[in-house]
Length: 234
Image 1 (cartoon, rainbow, N blue to C red):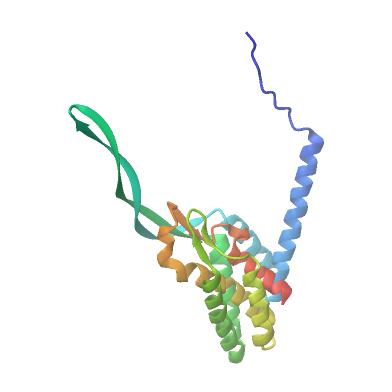
Image 2 (tube, helix red, strand yellow):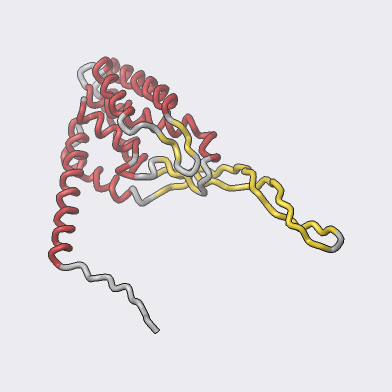
């Protein structure tokens, strides 16, 4: 009798060292980009790095905020007897499903807190023209994001990755009023959050997932990345 065994060779120490170094390089590179973007918004370096770490570890935390109930058609089979002989008969029925809507700490709450900080800072400095322009930019970005975003069943709210930051950069050029990074970050972040997620609130329950997380991809989510890319391009 022949027996076959699948032997997985162990990873060598040099390979582990290379993988570790690559991880460190990517971590340092990504953290430098994010903190540089936050610093352009007037956030001190220490606070900017702390926000990055909070966003990174907060990516694993989802806070439930609502529960939706949806009804979906399902195919069932029932047994019908004819002259004592059972026959399976398929039929359509409706099944109730609960969908939990959550908000991700790193992918949604951290960017939202940065935007609120920027808006409060404009009020504190008396830059009401900039505040007005930023709110207008957020409204425009939200409308365009909502027009482009499409709910995809089993996937979520999908939209072209580069659309939000490019739209934010264009808005910052016209409405920057001396502070293009703020307008770019606010419109890029809030445009996705409001236009793609909140304005599709009633469609979320039909995505076919037991839980939908706003900003669920954390630091790699569209909400987080849109603002960072927009600030670096502005």
